[in-house]
Image (tube, rainbow, N blue to C red; front, side, top):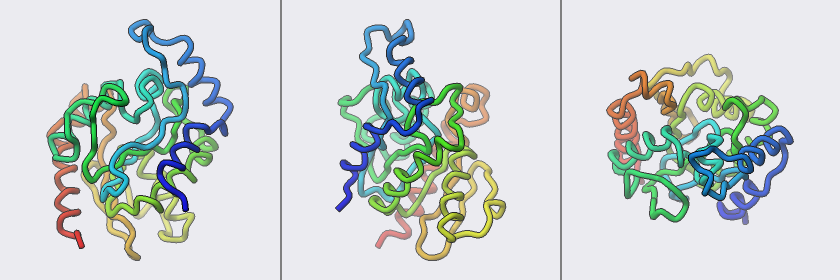
Length: 230
């Protein structure tokens, strides 16, 4: 029987996308001056969190000097700093910081994944690369069986909706436009989908996404999970 550990071992060993393999490994060799003493991860980044979570958070891809350096999703860059602080404020993490694997961080009822597991050049994975990664996400959904999905940004939202469409569970992506704070219910016991701006520096430095906005979405999700708990 498939397990999260088996899945994550496969993710870490993946070499399906030559462009991404070359880029992630080059970044790990060359490093950034501020991190010269780091032994970069330089491999695909597996999911992280509570494997029995009610909430699955879907991001875009590892940052070249963030998760590609630390080996943990959303760890080692300012987007991650912003996200984990909010998760702690919303009661979904045991501490507000995530600096490296083994730092004691644990998520509560939340699991974090990504549409692409390798750091892509210019933070832009190709459609073929997203397609190569999608089976990993599908298996995560089947193993974790979350009751809520939080899509961080429009790309993550469309990636999840595209999966539902290909499975014949929805007819059109256009029925479910991206907007911050939106949520969508689906028939057949599918998870409820929530949307939030991605915690990129472009969004957080300009105030498009504030701490309060993200915490509000996370608390709405916690309330939804509590109200639907069996």
